[in-house]
Amino acid sequence: MEDANVMTCPYLTEVTMVFCGASPQKKLIPTDRISTASACEGDGFNGCALYREALSRALHTIEELETELKEVHGKKGVQS
Image (tube, rainbow, N blue to C red; front, side):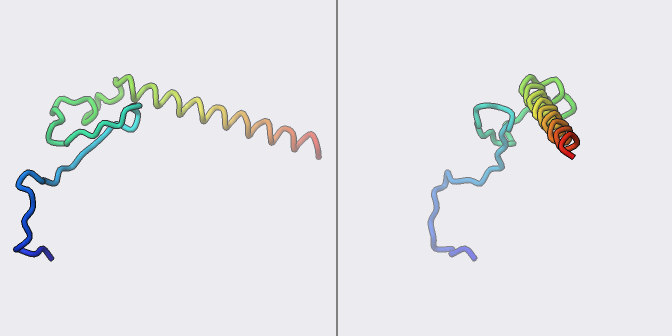
């Protein structure tokens, strides 16, 4: 419950912020400042270079893990 007698700065406001997890710089952006034509907010995110790079890294990691699993399973089969 808020105390009505407590003064707060008139410039203090609560704002919803977003950031791109694929970007190396975590710069917070107020959601009210994002353009309605933003690629991030619609189907255009597939064309974003940061998104494509992050997706490529994730796929590469998956491929490496699958290769490691195949090697581990292959060694177990040889030892049996």
